[in-house]
Length: 114
Picture (cartoon, rainbow, N blue to C red):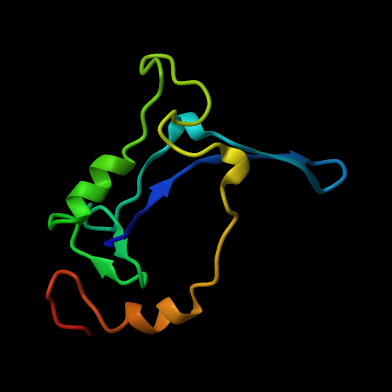
């Protein structure tokens, strides 16, 4: 079974109480989800070991299409995408310690490392 991770950006708003120097709220804005890109404009897609893969190859292209968020009413985006799991099940993060070792080893664009 082939798995890919397609990276997206979900903006957040952070409320700051300037009198108390505290952050009382953090609000996600899932209606503004967008594909994340590197500094060259390429989509960020990783394999099951979190090694970056070229976004134009199969199955990365397929994964990007499947992961593309959509809303019941595209013109009036409200809440999370209807084709994604409920936000209450979203994870806050995971340990990528093992993936750190792979990032430096593989360049998906075939350019020499500097």
